[in-house]
Amino acid sequence: MKRATFDLIGATCTSCSIGIEHMGRRIKGVEDVWVDRQESKIYMDFDGNPATVDKITDFVKAIGYEAQFVNEAPAEQ
Ligand SMILES: [Cu+2]
Image 1 (cartoon, rainbow, N blue to C red):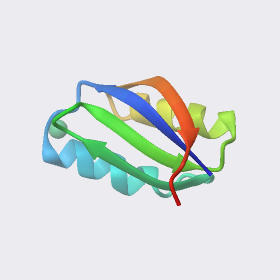
Image 2 (image 1 turned 60 degrees about the horizontal axis):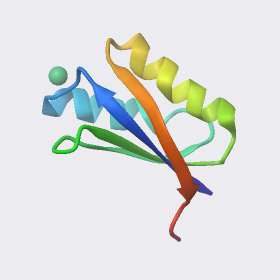
Image 3 (image 1 turned 135 degrees about the vertical axis):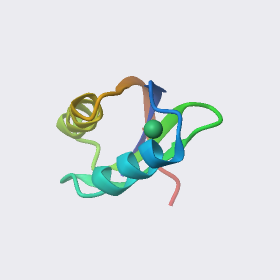
């Protein structure tokens, strides 16, 4: 499993964050996704498939925000 980090642009309130977390977890290949509002980051544990990264960025765009991929690394177990 890998952990990806994204810069989150445009979503600053709690309901945005909850929406991203709740809906993001339903995307195939996503193990977990959570938002750090202080740092404006999205963290995602996923299957390591680049298509899953695209799915999250597309999903965030579809609900009106922007997620810019920063990096990915092996997820801590
Ligand atoms: Cu909001």
